[in-house]
Length: 59
Image (cartoon, rainbow, N blue to C red; front, side, top):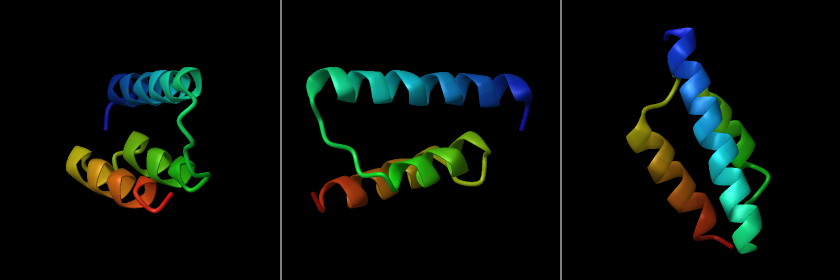
């Protein structure tokens, strides 16, 4: 994965976290591991979405 792609993904994660914080949406601590895997290109966009939906619906 190109550094440029990793930078875009990292920026997307920061924005997502900021929006959730502003909205008061609780996000489990485990999301950091999922985000890191996605940023590093170890999981696809679809896998990220599936993992996050699965994790966040447990709340």
